[in-house]
Length: 202
Ligand SMILES: O=P(O)(O)OC[C@H]1O[C@H](OP(=O)(O)OP(=O)(O)O)[C@H](O)[C@@H]1O
Ligand SMILES: Nc1ncnc2[nH]cnc12
Image (cartoon, rainbow, N blue to C red; front, side, top):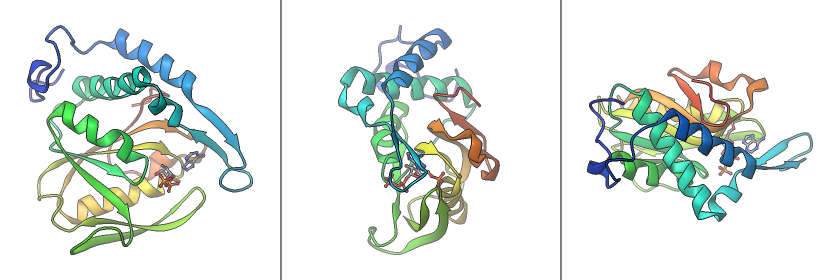
């Protein structure tokens, strides 16, 4: 575990609740079993991975956030200052993870949703094109940032989020996902280390 991250008691966990590879392995088995697949959604040829059953069950929800926390504590030398979540499903995990780590949470939103001056970046994803925005003062130069989202497919969404963070001078520590569609090689686009919880790749 990194010496610069807060320890368990500093973030409100019992001191005995230490990072453990065995605990992480058993949590990820439970999480994998909860996912559902929907063919041809939202368009023909797409096999949609549905993560929502995890959030319908409090014990799975807890297992997810705990797994992410354990991974970050065990694998990053530097404490993240900011967890950035990508709209919309990155918002399901980002805020609670940030709280556990004693970090800020900052959203990346689809264009037109954020007030005030914004940075904007266009992107392509597995089933369409879009624009992402962040409030222009939401990342301070030099802040250490981890990006989180549910799934990496082509990597277009995460790449755009990373570009916005870099425009503001943020220091990208890495990208964290629940799932990866490996056949699309999205991780090859990204400018910082990529970890996907349910494939175990780092
Ligand atoms: O790697 P990519 O090809 O970019 O695809 C991954 C992105 O696609 C999905 O979001 P979506 O844009 O469907 O939005 P939502 O979370 O608002 O449903 C998913 O939650 C990721 O953000
Ligand atoms: N196949 C997929 N399932 C769920 N979310 C996605 N985002 C991009 N591709 C996806």
